[in-house]
Image (cartoon, helix red, strand yellow):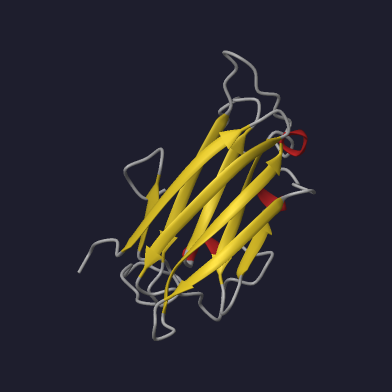
Length: 171
């Protein structure tokens, strides 16, 4: 079957100090491949993960400027969530605060997870005010450990599906 078998959702709010994210998903198969996810690395997004993309000055560039733009990842592991600030793709968030939970059913099978994240506005050079825009996107990648992409250079390690707030196609 060629459908996403996870159901992610998220919420975002901010105050004068933090940008807050809450993201959750029910997922019938939580998967992190044994190769290709090591940090820092470029393939972690191919496992079950939430990716948060930020553009503090709303420059909307096609590449990260290393100061006001960047990406962070959250990936479920055995009993916790891994956090990765992709320094190769943007800013460094030094003082992130976050909480996590992996959900299990009555038999102990993992059925989903959530994260609560507080990102200091100063770390992403964001100073929200009335009528000021900033860029934000969130993606959930779903990897059930199967290979559906016949063109893959790493068979068995690619995500099967992803859902992105801003796009209706894989990107």
